[in-house]
Image 1 (spheres, rainbow, N blue to C red):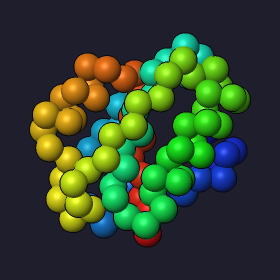
Image 2: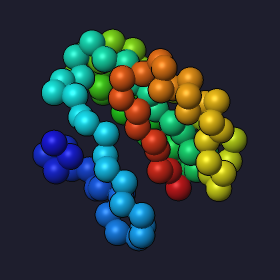
Image 3: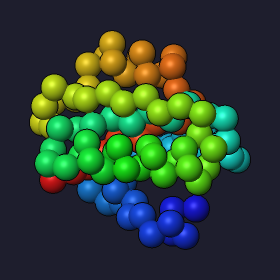
Length: 96
């Protein structure tokens, strides 16, 4: 799916620890999508635009946006746990 939409896989290379991606839903229709802003330049604009397009094109029911404190720090556990309870799919922005 990512190749057909013109996205670049940010997980390619670099990490020594292998992490299995979460299972992908067959459809986004009716799903709640979480968008995590990493606070880098224009990440918020990228995510708002993505959220609008997901609602228009893929029938996403709701978009939940959260913003990290600083790009160099991981998202707080409480924020991650909240998003895990509230959303079906999560996307992190890489602005900058």
